[in-house]
Image (cartoon, rainbow, N blue to C red; front, side, top):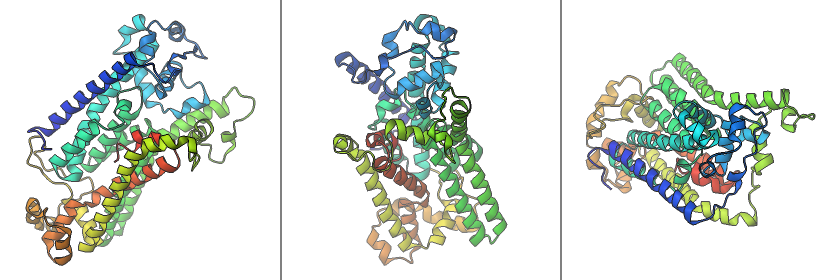
Length: 453
């Protein structure tokens, strides 16, 4: 599939069209079929009533409120009533906070007509669909940087727009916000805007718990810089500085998640109404999130391996198979890469900025420098001619790599086919795939692994 003349604009149009299609199919299915989930109709009054919650108890627009189903019920409830119950803390605060902000500003005129509950639902649908379109744009721009091919990035973006988890990105779920801040943060990280990247990746951790894993990308960046400072520049002090900086940035990514856990500890363990202290409050590391997942949803290693869950394993098998295939395929390419060049040369070439290039396309018209790069050295400039011949050399097969190991051009081609910069993404995907299959409810892998696969 060849990209249009303006690939980024094409991706945005594709994302908008995919959201319109998903919403249309969702509404059509609600008209034709009875909803499987019946929790949407359960709206008890808030435990701590206020002016707007008391008025919302009548729910003047139940047809709109019923659009919040499954996890959406919990997010809407948190926005309306706050975190009332222990299990409510499994739903991180970014989406509820955004719902409250929109309901009290942009959609405030609708509150007297529809009530707060319906307005929270409308706010969530509008927010998440706009966030998905922005996430798709970041996905394409990040893919261009990593894959070094606008056409491949465009194809990947089309698959992202029509991925199996599309309905979650257009519903009252946190997937769209997580995708926006995760993909946006990684894009800015790989273009050198580390401060913006740090802020966006930390926000991804306040949307979904797995956002904390994005700290690993800063660790990867720090290790590359430390290796370059130690073995190339022979300056150990710079290596220590890179490691300390990377560690601090990684810690910053964890701050929102652990701050929310501390908030739960204060509300339940220190200021709770229960006479008996909850079991997790007595732990040496009182982590509320893991306790909730285990206690209320049965999440744990091999706990989902039951005969009755076989249909869910079958449901998740396509996306998990794709993830495993991607991991195995990259591993094979990485082995070929190490056979054709030394690890030292690959790392140094990545740090020196040969990983990010300019592309002759309408939306990428400047040279983007990698966030992992330092000043371009003479050695990197010496390889510029080799890189310009990439389009001719990409047809070289693996056999020629083994027969011409001394040929710099062949080595460079293999780097392009299997860049080192893909490694942290594969490690992230591997961890999520393992966790989805062995620990979580396996059907959730459809919307967790999809963004990485």
